[in-house]
Image (cartoon, rainbow, N blue to C red; front, side, top):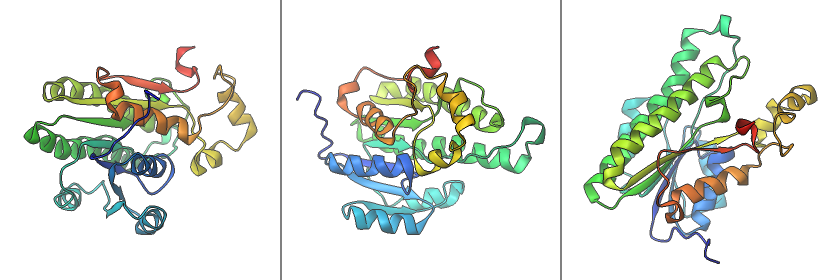
Length: 246
C-alpha cells in the first residue's frame, strides 16, 4: 500500500530502548529495515533486546551523565533518525517536591534530549542529508496531573524545546516533532494505573474510553520519522484518544 513505511538504508538511534515504548520502537524500526542503535542504562535490557533482534547495536550509558553520553556516542556513526524516549518520572505532591528529584527529572527529560539532539543534528547538518527527530512527550505537558508537578514541567519544557529545534534545524531539512501519549499500557503503565478508581477518573476523560497501547505510540513515531510526514515540523501530536481535545 502507499502507506508502507520503509527505513531501508537509514540509521536510527533510540534512547530508553530497554523497555516499554523505546524497546517496541527499536524493534519496529529494525523490522522496517533501519540499522538501529539502542541506548539505555541497563545492560541486562540491552542483552535481551539483542537476543530478540541481533541486528541492533547496543549502547549502555546513563544519559544523565553529559560527559559519558558524549563519549559513548562518538563511536556510533551517522544517524538519520533519532527517537528521544528515555525519561524519568517520580511522583511527589507539589509541597513535597525535593531539589534532587527536580534536578534528575530535568537532567534526563530535557537536558539529555537537548544534548543528544545536538550531537546527532550536528552530524545531520554536516552531511547535508536532513533527518527526523521525534521526542516522546506526554499529555502531561498540556494538562495538569496531581503529584506530577515536576514531570508535567519537564514535558512542557520538552514541547517548547522541540519547537525551537524545529525552527533552528528546519533550514537543514531536519524535522523535529513530539508525540504526546496519554497513559500507555506498558508494564509500567499497567502497574501505575491498576487502581480501578484512579484509572476510571482518567478514562472518563478519554472519548474513546481506553488507554493507549504501545503500538499506537510506536505507529505515530514511525509516521513522524518517515518521509510520509515530510511537511510536518514542530508539532505536538497527541496520542490520547481525544483527551486533550475535550
